[in-house]
Length: 220
Length: 220
DNA sequence: GCTTTTTTTTAGATTTGACTAAATATATTT
DNA sequence: AAATATATTTAGTCAAATCTAAAAAAAAGC
Ligand SMILES: [Mn+2]
Ligand SMILES: [Mn+2]
Ligand SMILES: [Mn+2]
Ligand SMILES: [Mn+2]
Image 1: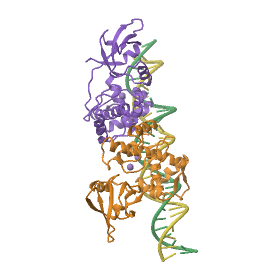
Image 2: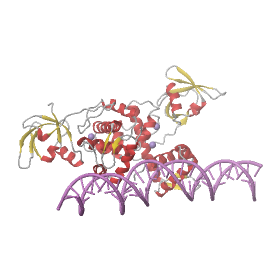
Image 3: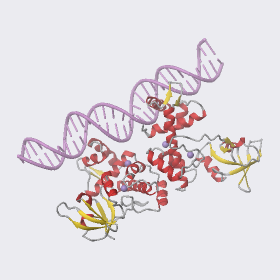
Image 4: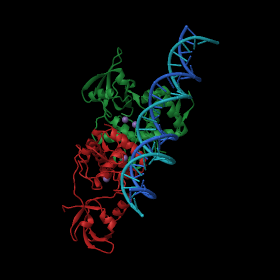
């Protein structure tokens, strides 16, 4: 039950890609992992042999129960480390991912459970994504994209669906982060940009592309 | 300037073995790393090609300046994580090494320097070993073995020279740890065992083997 | 429905790190 | 100084993870 860094990166990425569509293709996975399709096929054969996923040649693949369990353990490690880096070591929002990408592969269970306790069992990572608990349970969290929120409805940012450095830099600049309260003031049909109010009297305009990547939870 | 996990483990181990003798042999290193002499020879060629050590076939090897610099960076990471695990996550003395053995290979400089700051720039790891600073400077720390301390001289434990689980378990049982004040009450010639006083009125006897692995610093 | 394009898989090569068995160099005895 | 024993290196394999180029399958276009 111990997997190599490569295997773990493949497993985690399949998990994330699956969420959108039911099944993941060779090209998608190669693109995401910045590797070649031929390498993906090789690894899929290996992960199938280890009984972590369903795979028939040319038919795409998806994690089975065991694979999902492994993926959630990796995601738990990743997000706990992100929380630690942001909260304790004062890394900024957009720096944590890269470092957590390495730390997630240290897979000592006791370490992670003690880290979890030390951090006070946080529910979400710095990007607002839910942290699976020690049993792999993860909050569903039905999130809505900002453009779907009606005008003049106060709401709270709970995550971003794209986590590139570029978007995080922009959000940082506009002081929009997890927990930020905001409200839509105007919707412009021309380019679908939004004028929003953050804080007491800060008004700013955000593009459609940005708004679509800002996730909101409803209770607020 | 980025090294694989294997390369780092070799470099670190050479550094530790060097301290005792000037030069390290193939067999010593193979024994320490639980690998085969042939594998050691292969790796020595690689590390020589990367200009990290002096090596002539059959003549043993030792790190050069660059190799030493790399080793100290690894040791810094190892000991800072050990301190974190013991101090923040409440791991016991004898559990930290194994976990740090993995964490030490996450070599993000900013991570380590922020961790150092978060921990308050500790000087020593939980075993009393000095932690190199961000520039690779390490405290010399002229340590004396317990048997060399005269009778009835109060002193402070500052480290253990053997860090197997077995010895740490024994020290834990006898409540001897870094910072423990103690004093030798009697030396028995028969088996060279020592009767020592720890705390106000605790008297215990320790074997020659144990005493030789308990390190003392003089200021106390 | 056949042709063309795209996707995926296979075949074959490379790199890293490890191993065993054999050869060679060094150290120790006699 | 040989002979023997020990230590070290070399030669040849192997498994993991990657790659390029070619073949095969599936999808899209006409
Ligand atoms: Mn990773
Ligand atoms: Mn995250
Ligand atoms: Mn290590
Ligand atoms: Mn230590």
